[in-house]
Length: 93
Figure 1: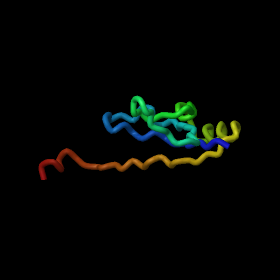
Figure 2: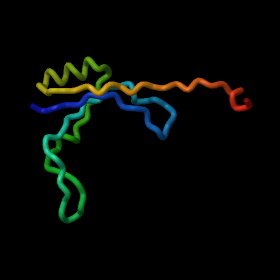
Figure 3: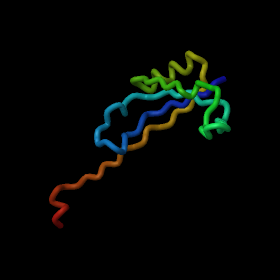
Figure 4: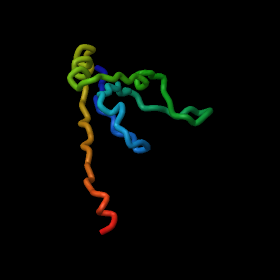
């Protein structure tokens, strides 16, 4: 039985916006470890399963898809946003 990981993308550290962070991603996990290629030194394997990433609007939709396809899944909770509330006047105190 294949295993899937369901998670919500975190905010990109290089940008201030939160676009494309609301959807849930279902990613299949590879059963085999990657091996180093003797010629190039790159890591890789013959499995193409780890290239599949499916996006869903809700967590329930992602879970339903995993159950329908017969995948065992685990959900990684979305990281909490920490708000740092401050006023402009705090710069001058």
